[in-house]
Image (tube, rainbow, N blue to C red; front, side, top):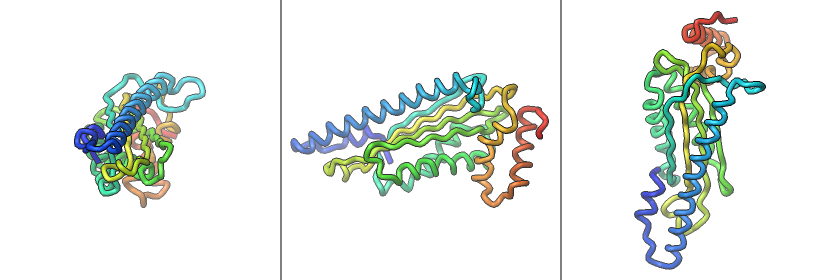
Length: 219
């Protein structure tokens, strides 16, 4: 897994056929950049409308950091995706405990691997929204991924898919956060890191964090 631009730079365009393939690759790079910028715009719109009217997603009080990346992926490099996702999550949610970071990384990795495991001839997308702990704050994590399979046989020796990833971290407005919403978007993280946790223990763990970070009573 590497940057699409790196593949373009190293591409041997010594024949007309390969020149055409390289031009196609540059088009795919532009498409990936367009997708990641679209994710950025869509996330901003979603955040501005969060918790308003019929929208039940976590409302935010301020925007945090973001990351956006595009990649060229071969089947031989797909195995490094979990490590890459873990590294990105650890730097992105640096204030979270290991159990929370591991849970987030597991969910994001599953999202990415499922997407990359598909035959994305027309381009496929996947989205994940979570509530996480980051230091003394509750944060909303919006994650979007896109991948498209490469059809050119001249390119397939270099890469099999192009992809784009976008994530943004935002501080949650805890005065507008109820337990039901918190549970919907936080429990998956706890469950991902503790798959054998029973329902009652999962509920108690969720209540503990909700009370600690919002100072609200739980049902």
